[in-house]
Amino acid sequence: MTLEFRCRDVGVACKNIAKAETAEELVAAVAEHAKDKHGVELNQTLVAYALTKVRPAGG
Image (cartoon, rainbow, N blue to C red; front, side, top):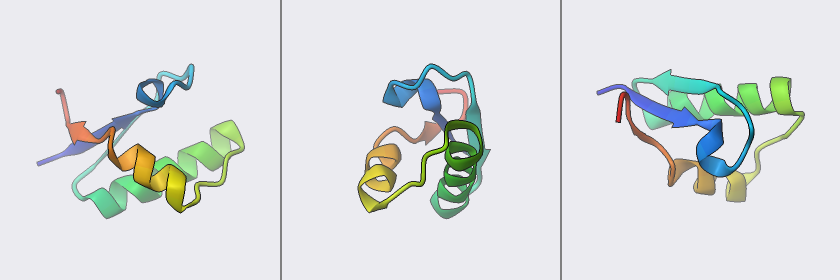
């Protein structure tokens, strides 16, 4: 099952939707996007919070 994370779900005004097959791959994609586009380095607290917003793709 494909998973997705949307920046807007954590209060960021961004239309990015990251998708991956595993939570580990998704966290890596989200971390790269956060750093490149938002200048934010994800720490363990931010990763844990982001994981609460992960959902099946299309959901």
